Amino acid sequence: MRPATLFTGQFADIPLEDFCVKAKKWGYDGLELACWGDHVDVERAARDKDYARGRVELLAKHGLKVFSISNHLAGQLVCDPNNDARSDGFAPKELAGDAEAKRKWAIESMKNAARAAKNMGLKVVNGFTGSPIWHMLYSFPPASEAMIEDGFKRFADLWNPILDVFDECKVKFALEVHPTEIAYDIITARRALKAVKNRKAFGFNFDPSHLFWQMVSPAKFIMSFPDRIYHVHMKDAALTLDGESSILGSHLNFGTLGRGWDFRSVGRGGVNFEEIIRCLNAIGYTGPLSVEWEDAMMNREAGAAEACRFVKRIDFEKSDRVFDEAFG
Image 1: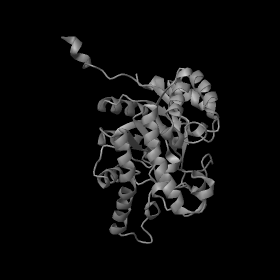
Image 2: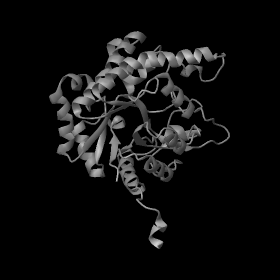
Image 3: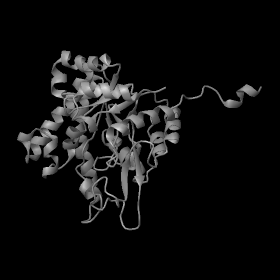
C-alpha cells in the first residue's frame, strides 16, 4: 500500500514538532513538508547538511517519513508578473513592491529547494511555476498566438536554469497543474512539457481537485502522462453551480455559500478517487498519496484526521492476476 502523507502547507502556523505529534495521532505515515513556517528553510537546508538531516530525523523521531518538500510560494513568483501587492507576502518583506527583485529571489529559492531536497535524501520537490500569460486566459483584449507562444518561451527561459540545478542534484520538479500556472489542464500541460523539450526533471504533482472543478478528467490526466506523475495530492472539490454563480468564482472567497465551486475535505466532494487509484495502479505509481487538506467550512484538524482514514480505505494494491485465472 502507498504511504498516506499530509502536506503541511495549510498547517505551517503550527511548529513542526508539534505537528508531527498530531499527524502521527491522526494515522499518517509521513509528511510533505512546506517550505514556509518553520517546517523547512530551503536556504538553510541547501547549505547546512546537518540541518537538512535534522528535519528528516525529527519526523523519524515521531515515526514519520518525508518523501518530498514543496515550495509553491516561491515558484509562483518565477513567472508571474509580480506587479501588485498580492505576491508580496510570498517573498521577504524587504522585496515588497519590487517585481524583479521578487523574481530573482524566487529563482534562487527554487534552485535551493533542489539542493535542500538532495541534502534531505529526497527525489521530488513540488510547487508552482507561475505564469506570464494567465491574465490572457480570456482573449479580450485579443491575445495573439504569438503572445501565448512568447509566454511559454518565457516560462522555459526562466525555468530551464532552475531545472539544470535539479538535474545536478538528481531531483525532479513536480508542477502542481493548477489555474494561474503555466499548465492548468491537459492541453497546457503538454505544451509546458514541449516548451522545456520534455526534459525529465520536469513533471507533475497530480492534484485532481484543480482538474475536477474545471471539468477536466483527472483519470485522463494520469493516463496522458504516465511517466510524469512524480507525486500525488489527494484533494477534493465540489461543483455547486446554482444558476447564479459561475465556474469563475464570482469574486466570492472560498467558504462562501453561493460560489460555483469550492474545495472540500477529501471524500466529501465530487472527485472519483476510486478511478484515480485504478489509474495510478495502471501506471505503476508507488509513491505517497499526500493529502492537501482544504475545506474553508470544516475544522482542519478533524478534517485531516478523517482524510487520512479515507485515503487508507480507498487505496488498494494492483492485482497480479486476472480474477478468472483461478477457474481453470
